[in-house]
Image 1 (cartoon, one colour):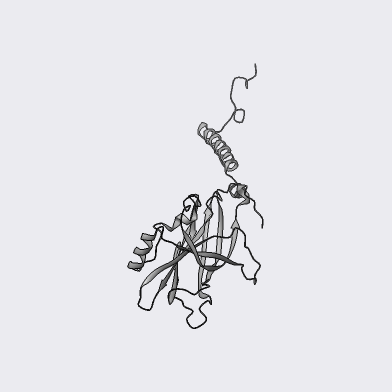
Image 2 (cartoon, rainbow, N blue to C red):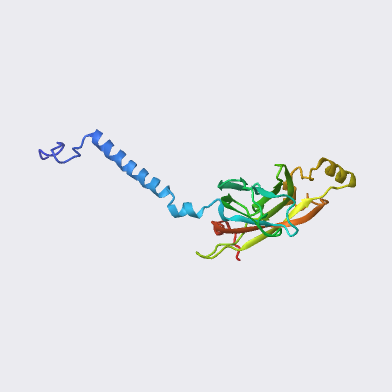
Length: 242
């Protein structure tokens, strides 16, 4: 039996203290956890691929109003409202607007009454159902300062309409519809009170089912100049072409 048997000499065994071995093992576990966490973080391309809505940006203006037989009042102004379905949300831009008073008394009676009211809005939605519309109420004002309703007009925001720089947007036209009294008695009452018939809720004109039975008369037309840009529709599976 040699003298070295049964004796632990320096260098034969593990000389690292037990605390240091525990620290090295914990460091290795932390490195593995960090690698797993990095692999689970989605890349920016994955976030872009999971788009949840598309946006529609519309720019343009309400150009003018035309009355073939001339307006009943000396001055005319417009109030407009943007109306959309439940899936749509106004992202930027005003929902309501009021134009200045305009007149064509210095020209022919049937010349356009110019407003040039700018419109610039952005909507976002998850479905094209309930596409936004512009609902316009046309009012007239006499020299005595009395305001009366001249009619209503509405038009959908353009689905297409991206134009090249320098090109002029297409001119769109919507009829001005004036409500009529449903009976002779109501007509006589309106004449005595000198008040034109009005709709309690003009939004019924936007629904074909609700506006059945309404008596309306074409009084003139409104001219719009609008263009639109749609983003993100293809990622949701919507494709439309002009």
